[in-house]
Picture 1 (cartoon, helix red, strand yellow):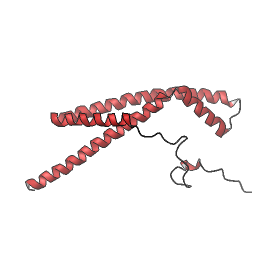
Picture 2 (cartoon, rainbow, N blue to C red; picture 1 turned 90 degrees about the vertical axis):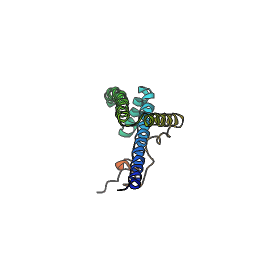
Picture 3 (tube, rainbow, N blue to C red; picture 1 turned 180 degrees about the vertical axis):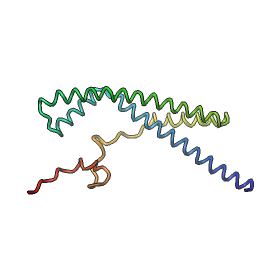
Picture 4 (cartoon, rainbow, N blue to C red; picture 1 turned 90 degrees about the horizontal axis):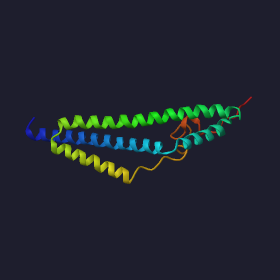
Length: 160
């Protein structure tokens, strides 16, 4: 290979590497935002919403409701702990990645990476993605996106 071909190859590889880094940063920031949005709601909100849905869709009896509520309360606590641990793990992964990148990037490249991360974080904080549809995605065609394994379909009528 001559020098021109090597330069072109190096440029293409650099573009793909930067694209991967930027994509990873964007996905990471989005994930962090979604987790924080969920965590900001009071545990009571999650539990009440879920209990209302269970009661309505499963037609819980009055004797079932206290038992189901106890189970939902316990799982809500566990989910909150998992979310907090995931946030901590996520931040540790980002920090480790940056330490590894710093070892191979020049000081100028690393400063640029830090500026890129800051721009992405600032942009996400100013313009977070819209929340999902309330109650999940809109119903889609049977077997298509939004069908959620038939949960949006009306129950089939029994035939004799």
